[in-house]
Image 1 (tube, one colour):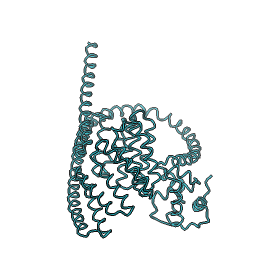
Image 2: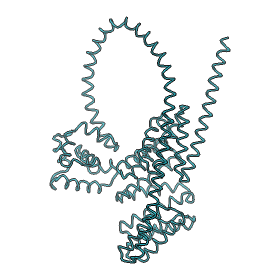
Image 3: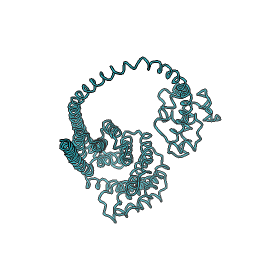
Image 4: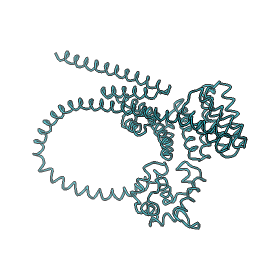
Length: 490
């Protein structure tokens, strides 16, 4: 009889395991489809598919499926511009066991968060996310590591391009090209093209036109060698180069060719940008008012059309999110019924336990009083130790450029932050962090290293803060900060 019972139980567990594996494979299949939609740029379909995978994962309590589905949904949302919901999905990824165990997933979450922050123009936050990603990538190996480095370096060069930190931009493009050498040129031709274009644009901005020409020649060689269909950026930068030289007609010819290529590949966002630029170019250089008006009108029409489509996309996305949340709520309700039954059983057991335990309470009370006195002594010692540890933690957070640095600094030195805010109540968090590092007596070189910017960028920021806070030119910047806080840091 016992053998039959054990076999029945074992059979039930086996059937449950098989069913669970089938459900896992179904989620994997759905997420593979979501990945295909992403590669085609069909982000609405990607989102819908990812949310379906999420529903199934929630029903079957599939932790890996839940993490990957949340991530795919986040990626789609960031790509369509619904950043708040996208970041919420990334936070849900971080709550899974799968995220804690998989370094690649941790790396990818930082990458997508960074991209979202770039689009929101929260550049300091974006830089932090990409450097957190770099810390994860160090623990990867093989192709996974190299590919992750490529995308992170590309994202960092984009941030520094948009913030006009050209030296840092150049550094990360060079690192990107170093990694690309480990790949077959044909398979990474588009990435080589992007890197050469970026370096050309960088040297145009710096006024080093010969170097810009050299890299644009490399860009054109890549386009011709591998017959790359989308090369309008190369044409645009050739136009920028000629404009910098003062050859307006040559520049205009390249801008027109760039527009033609954008039409060939049907990139409507890029076409809109060309219309805007050409309208301004004709007008500011007094070349042809009729042409300027023509492009201005074309821009207005296309812009209105794209904005309408974007609103429709956002509406569709929000409806999908609401449906998903309704399904999630329904799943939680069905689970809550099971939980209620279990809770009743536990309550009965707890009542029985407490009746038994009450008989022991009288003699335990005496022991508690003694333990409480001992705990108070230990807590006092710990409080003193924590004060020392917090300062050590603070310096470590600063060195790793951790977002929690300013939070802990404000807790330890509230009077300093308050004093700074008397100068400017709307002082940005990046400025407060910079002043906090000076208060901790970090050198210019240290700040440069910890915040991932050049020494020159640190010096420029110091000069701006001197003017903003009326710091005398002969005063030591760090000493002024320390005196402002009314406290010397050891």
